[in-house]
Image 1: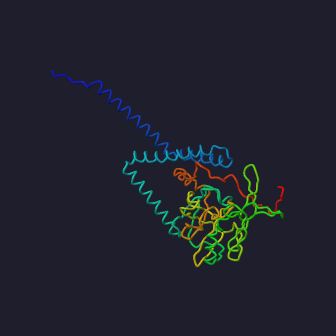
Image 2: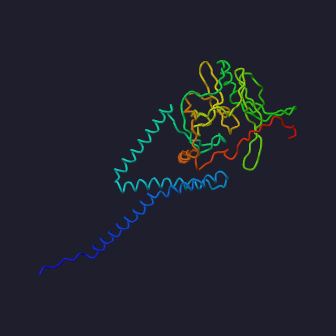
Length: 345
């Protein structure tokens, strides 16, 4: 009689364990897929984002924590989406979908730019320098075309003298004399500067307030140039420009400020910009006058909060983002100006 060979007990046990593991993996995958399909993680992000905004607005001190949680959750969602897609449709299918999504996004970006006449149809506000007109986290739809702003002409001789003499970088300071007047130009050494008749800033004190105090700071209200005077105005259009690599603002990326006036010298134009929540023109803060080729576009439409995605990416790249709120976000100008101040104040 032939002997019967029975399966080894260890082999049978291994097969059963493998089946149990596979069953467990299938169950975990189904739960993960249901979680991914339910989009509950996106609802969690929305809830965390609302808490982040409240914490930021009221300075509760928890904003960086919620920002980090939001960032980790977004990374988890993307990883989960890729993993589920690879498990259900295969890695090749997931790669095809990813490439297709990138191509569609690129087509929309370049198509939108072509339609709007700019290479950058979208940009986000990352600072608080345009409060209250624009808030940090706003997304701007941009369009191209000639920047509209008051235009003054200067001779090449006067322009070269203004730049060589540091007239463009003069700042506004608190200056008192026996009459009690104040608000004047300061030269590069911090001394009171006399008007030159070439390029002179008009200064005063402007009231600012934060969450607890109200105070006055020296501010620019206009400029006298080319035989005329131009007042600072919130009616001028907002532009987005890229600073030069040597400018102080270069570390902040694209700048979203208001084009206040244009100086034309021998047919060449230079733009002078200022943030509504800044006390001085950009050029006064160690930045170069802006040339037209630096302008990426003019603001057409504002989309609140949509720009926070760029803030998240900026934080990952080491620039001020969700994780690091820039200075000045807790203060705004009230619109009040002080024209005189007692000598003993």
